[in-house]
Image (cartoon, rainbow, N blue to C red; front, side):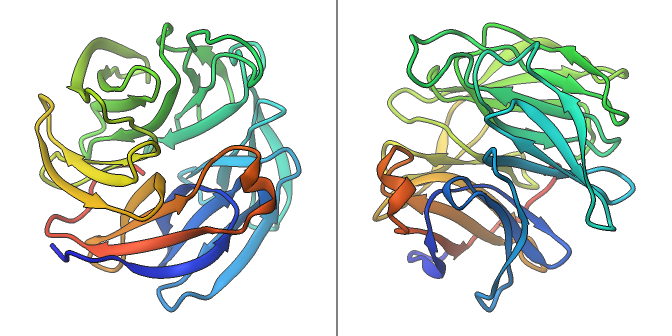
Length: 279
């Protein structure tokens, strides 16, 4: 694995939800209120403005883009003609702003939320499960700030990061998309998980927004690789033609300063094991 990172893109306020799709990296920028792409040459394109702040991204089997609209607690859909429609209202489940999401191969979306309002006391969250046609039901509850989420290539295991819990949890994905068999995939100690992505050996790369790093952990909690960064890392994704480029979205902070400070960037490093599964 390369020992130093390269900067692909600067000028982000706060990047989240990176996804490799159709030869480009797609991502949300909270405080520019937009969904963007960037190619491997560093050329950025605005795809869609999202006034209520975008976060998690994913695609339905037919190609429509699903995206989380954070502040109005909804999942929206962008079709090939450029029309935006409401896919699912999540306000009955989300106790706070919605955030990251993974979309399974069959179009089922698993959407997290803070669990509490940003200026309120901590409260655990319930994961929302949204069918491909937009039907909403409650998933696992009692989650300590659910965040980045992945699904393995077989579609039978989902792993979710709990940022406040400082752990990754694994679930079995049942035939109807429900989640069962909760267990701890990795107890991370002093490390904090935000966005995550999965590789072909079952390792999970984890963005750490408190310790200025991105690290790889395997089932059971062993940390196998650590990339130290100049800024905190909030999300990561394996992509490129061979899925061996690790994209890391970094910024000084996710707080109020990020609204007015375009210091965020996308950094890359080459890794040994390619990406796998969803997203």
